[in-house]
Image 1 (spheres, rainbow, N blue to C red):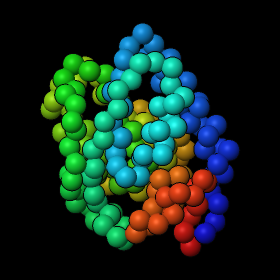
Image 2: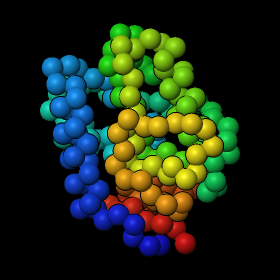
Image 3: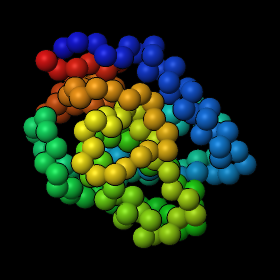
Image 4: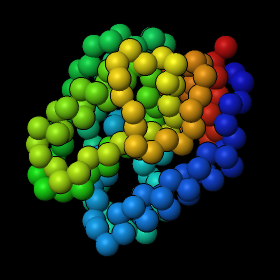
Length: 168
C-alpha cells in the first residue's frame, strides 16, 4: 500500500468542509444521509465538526461486491428511516467513482421532495466518470487508484486505517 492522504490532511479537510457547510446552512437544520458502509467514519467526523443543528440517517447501496471495479449495477439494501420531504438534505459519500451510484441515489431522493439536496464527497475521481455527476462539496480530487482506509475498504478490510492508501 502507498499512502495517498495522511490522517492529518484528511482531518484538516474534514474541518474545512464542516465549516463551509455550516456557513452555507447557517440558521438551518440539515439532514445528513450517510452512504454505508464507506462513509460512516467521514460522516461521524464531519457531523462532530459542524456547528448547525442536524439529524442523521443512512442508506446502504452496493455496486462493488467484493471486487475492485464497480459493477455498474446499484442495489439498495437499506432505505432511510426518516422522511426527507421539505428538509435540507446533504448526502455524505466517501468516494465518487463512475457517478452511477450517486446519480441513482440522488434521483431516488429527489423524488421524495426535499427542500434542497446536495452531496459532499471526501474523495472524487472525475477521470472515472461514466455519467455526468458533480458533487457540491469535495474534499480531494484523486487519480484513478483503488483506495482504502478512513472507511473505504477492499473486501471489508482496511476500513480502520487512519489515512487513505492506494492498493498496489
